[in-house]
Image (cartoon, rainbow, N blue to C red):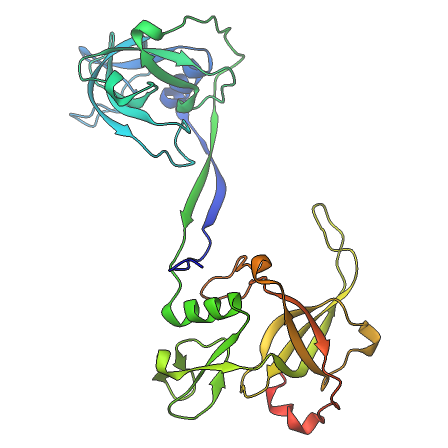
Amino acid sequence: MPAHLSAPEYTIEYPYTRTVGPVIGAFLTALRDGRLVGIRCGDRVLCPPLEYDPDTGESLEPEMVNVGPGGTVQAWTWIAEPTPKHPFREPFAFATILLDGADTPLVHAVRAARMEDVSTGMRVRAQWREERTSAITDVYFVPEAGAVDTFIPAGEGEVELTEHLISLSFHEEFYPHRERYARGLLEGKFIGQRSPASGKVYIPAKGYDPIERVRMTEAHDVELPPTGTVVAYTIISPVQYYGQKETEPYIRASILLDGADQPLGQQDIRTLPIDEFRAGLRVRAIFKPPAERSLGEMDNRWGGAEVIERWEPTGEPDLPFEAFSEHVY
């Protein structure tokens, strides 16, 4: 078992569409058509093109000038471990490239087999992807000696809109109390915490008593038995939609483990007949074999662990409603 457990990585992502205007639109149109262009700014050519003079802030007329496709590397850095958002899955370089005919450098990717193949002052040449989307990623650079010329026919019309996926990927470490709870599940145990102020046992605990507002540490951890009482449940009838994998109704229950003062919610029950299921039923958790246990999508707020194979009746008499009424919600 790993020395340290981590929550899964999550990605928040959404498409962002914007109009591009005459300057950026001309630049993206050129990329789609296999060309690089800059904009004339007095005696200079700016690439990538700007809509304004960087020295005066004055608007520039969209007078576009072809630049490249060759250029000279002015500075660079090697990307040894690319992320999913990088243009290549294998290591590559980001470089500032002064394109032939331009007076300002373009920051872009240089595809090279090894870090030793990239150097300041080297000559590079633009290469075009077979599938282009009118985006800066339509082009990349390679050492000039390995460049290949390709014919790209011009597309129709000017690019007026551009769409990008805006995304943020993140993951957080388990809080100490949450990691101990997760580790317990992987070991086939339920670990709760007993409040030093009230004596109440919470599972899964938050690391503090939410009523008495006192912190709980590892010294307050307690192991609870795998038996408990159903205090509430609902029958889930899956709505069919594209991608839906559930087809049959099943039960989702809250189970008050013996010795706990807080029900364990969101427990799926799939092996007991729906018409025989009821509040007050005494049940026992049967854990999966150790090799099949997984934390799944469990994080600091949500369960998601895939460790329980099933809940089954213990055979004991049902508890009367009065015995668990304060735990129904």
